[in-house]
Image (cartoon, rainbow, N blue to C red; front, side, top):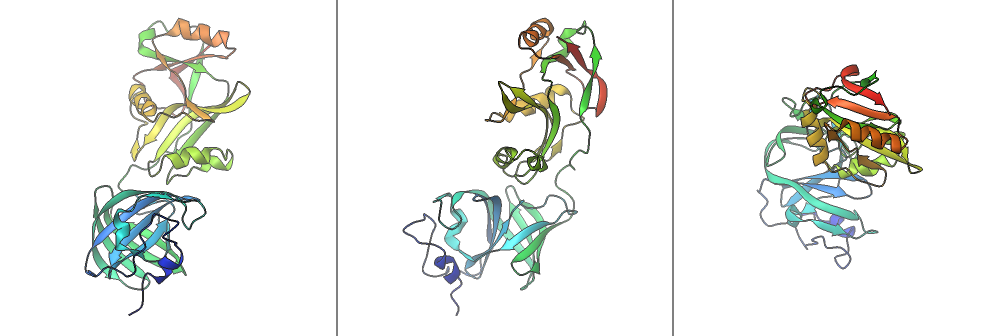
Length: 315
């Protein structure tokens, strides 16, 4: 009988890595456990491992499991892993194979519907991952993973930014609005999916932000502004959060969800907001040399294009 773990052992030195390195596969080959590990290595990915014949047959999935049957994700077939890897989490030293942080994203059982050298069809029963999937080989180590059935999240909103209309004075019913600084920057929508964002093509420093989201999906709205001589992305709205579209929700709901993300970094921050505080915010904007303030109705949904629910008042 061939040693299914020989390739796994050849890539690891038990004196240098905390990963399990057993001498032989498990003696119980009929189990049906699975694990998905979030792996912050050279590039973020998720490792899907299915128990079969005493080992964990493994695929690295750069964008995680697809949530929509209309979109397949790449899955790279890797070496079989030992059963002890079902619960492994920790820090693999940099310089070692797979160096980086690994956490258990989900675990549970699965049902095999088909298993061949080129196609694996299965049903996951986990706490976070569930449903029918099929893995199919495309070329060499490269496979694709497809979700069967219906989508498990809202589609990403395809919208243009909501824009304020100009007004000379603050609204009389100030208590119905939140007041924010007008930053005078360049507007930017940031979609995040699978720990990645297309916005990083223009702003590479956004890769760290996207990776910090892990498997959480989001669409953020903000401006790239120059503050203190540095380029900062200031976020002030959230259109999509963890599989759910927020564009129809009132500003208060979107704002609370945005603040819960606690977005603070070297290149990004969450914009402050002051409900009902028209005069003080306008004075502060003037003192800081900002163009003015934006009044946002607390009950307004996100409306693409010019909207009377957002008002720009010059400082």
